Length: 380
Image (tube, rainbow, N blue to C red; front, top):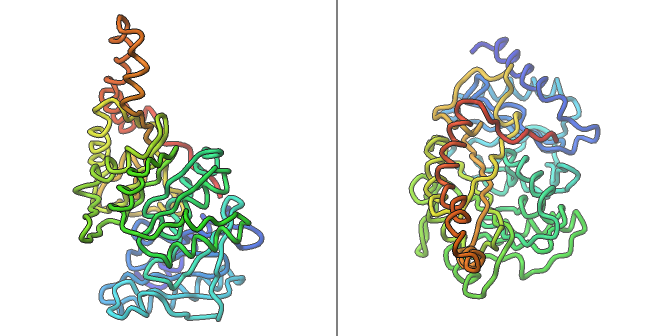
């Protein structure tokens, strides 16, 4: 792609996102998803007044000229940007992967979304410490978890749990292997004036920590399950393509009757239809029901007028490789107790539960054929 074509492409992408911008320049958003918007060597993010350029070129030096042009275009169109950070995704040097400053001096340390402050550490690791593709799920948490107890597994820097706390959750427990990540979550609490209970920020391996919570009889109204694509320890393996159902079944005993599981699977090479089949199998026992699909916001997927590339793997009925489903959970002993007094009518009462698999399959077909849509996208 020549310079003029690239500059036009990037200008159009930024123009499509202008309605997201706030006067105080505090929001986080994606300015360009090059994989879907015409330049797969580049992704550009905005965190308040800091722009992050992600160089995906292989070898990395093949992207150097592109990065220079992108920096020039962004600073020309957004003169209020104070700092530009470059992350070289395929570099052999950790410092290059974590990021180095190309322009300016001070990186943004916090962003504001839906009225909530989130602490960020843009050079903490290869990622940026805050996932833009789960914005709508954070908004869902703010709107739906007032007075609820919440478990945020694989919490990373805690943004989903912070959103739940902002929505008035009665208790939020954050669980992650990395204590430094959890410290970022605590900083978000401080920014919002939330009280910090150290016991609710638990550093440890997912598998034994969940078992320990279960042994203690802990129960939650909502569990967030947002694991990495792959992780292995001597306690267990996380593999979103091969054992995601095992992860779901691991946390199910911790969920109160009528509670919800927010199940996120961001495996790039897992098709949406295959993920739906996973959920179908989970729902087959009649105790789990698919309630809602949460879409990824358009600044992460690209807009109709800016998308020019199809995903490598079809995410439908989801709109992005980050596939988010809300599942309603019923507990077995509760269901048995509720039908026992009315044995003569038990078949009629049980039918809705045992028909969940059929219902989910029909829902899947309706989503594919366009007769039912995803949950409505949520604006910043």
